[in-house]
Length: 110
Image (cartoon, rainbow, N blue to C red):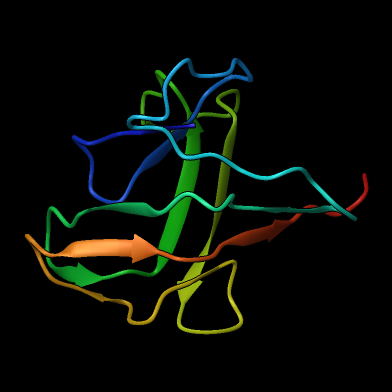
């Protein structure tokens, strides 16, 4: 999963290949009971634009960002509690560092 440094708050999901280096990559731990959590690495980056975080999106490397019914994406809510991605504050200030200490995503059995 590659962090797209040129985009505001975007993390780009690799198509399943393993990165040779942890630089600019986020990693997940092993799934358990339908839940996948971030690993022990620190996820952080510089906020590029001020605003209120409302959602996140994980996309494949090379995603066009446009409307699509074929590009694989995972999107969820951002909040301070009870959402797919919880932050200490949803108010983002440009040029500050955003650190994500924990993240867990539940995928229902299909």
